[in-house]
Image 1 (cartoon, rainbow, N blue to C red):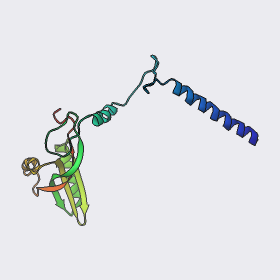
Image 2 (image 1 turned 135 degrees about the horizontal axis):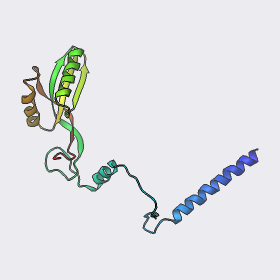
Image 3 (image 1 turned 135 degrees about the vertical axis):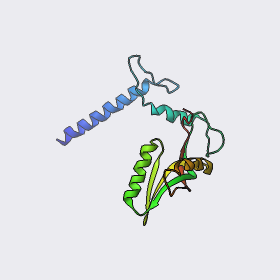
Image 4 (image 1 turned 120 degrees about the vertical axis):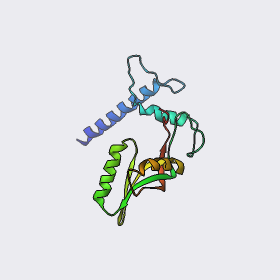
Length: 159
């Protein structure tokens, strides 16, 4: 029985070794694989974003020019706080109301004993946050601009 297992393992090892050598033999000199004409390659569309990210010039930081592909980065920024209190039901109601009114803007709910806080938006500058604050101040009465660590996404900002 052990002789049979040893034969099987050496047989499969040999087959895999031959298959890898055969695969290596189909490589060109410049390490580009030879693809037969009847093979269809399917790729995830998000792969283009990844490859474009590594090929594009880098733009670090929030201010300054933007590159063609954009970036996603986190750093110091500002959010607008629309609720701060101890009642969880009121916090959830404020969050749901904001999400219904502004579906494209991110909402952050935090709990720091004993306060629930609802913060909205990701703004790189206080001026951007203040402009949104002026719009929200009529809807949410205890509303203020607060500093926070935010995520700035500049991918296709103009689209």
